[in-house]
Image (cartoon, one colour):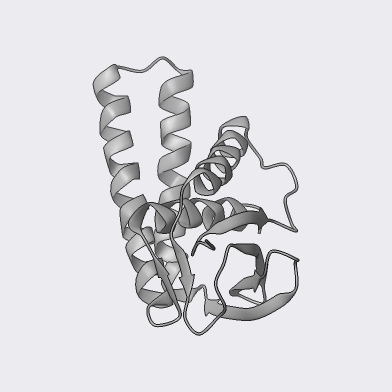
Length: 156
């Protein structure tokens, strides 16, 4: 029986990221996303789906395709509402990387990580809200997609 999930993710701009940490984060997000997700685009035939994520002209384009890679629908979201969260997220990731590489106190690393998780949750919630009525996502799917959006935005 077909499932309302993503079977493939394609990041056309998947050039190496500026840090090994960011690159590992992106790879893990894709792996986790494909291992389990809920992705239900409204008004489209049953899945599974392939998704191409592209940043273009200040927009996030979600190019939804069928299993044979035929285009079904493209959804464009303005990045403006995400900019503050993405900027703060990148700053906290850099602080986390520094704290870990400097072998900082465990309490400091944990506090930074709590802040990172909070921003990550905020970004995932915003993404799910912006996609409401277009694509139904579970929270973990929204979190992993937000990770990919941040990774893609890091190169801009």
